[in-house]
Image 1 (cartoon, helix red, strand yellow):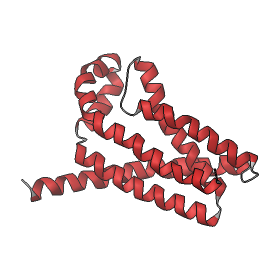
Image 2 (cartoon, rainbow, N blue to C red):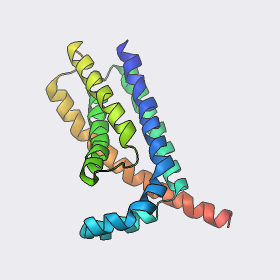
Image 3 (cartoon, helix red, strand yellow):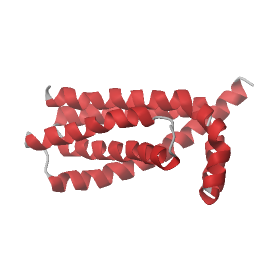
Image 4 (tube, helix red, strand yellow):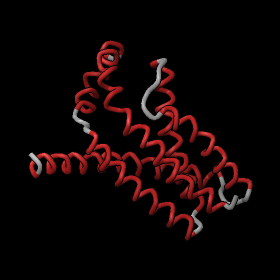
Length: 176
């Protein structure tokens, strides 16, 4: 497979991962809210009100914004040959799916998006291995861009959810 084709799989796999989360998050949270509050009282007090406020339209807007942005990042890194930058985003994606997997293991149960997280984890390894063996990345560049990509991704998640909440409030006003 060409390097570029391998890179273009990221937005596709990322979208499948988010579709699983979109479909199952709210029902899972409703079913497991009390368990989370009981097992993790401090964390639950902080995060459950935030999660309770997340509606499906909020998630959809956030996912759409992130998909467009990830597709643009993929386009730019493919066209410019910025393989280390792309590898940084792969590491950020790997950390993200690792959180889903770790949460599922900690809770000893299914959590939304854990199936696609487990399926996309090997993709990340293959991409990094392929880029390295083809001489397109080096460890220093990957570490540097991983830090920046992770900061960017966390900031964008916060921004996308903020914008999505504004959109949700607008929807409620317009279609009340």
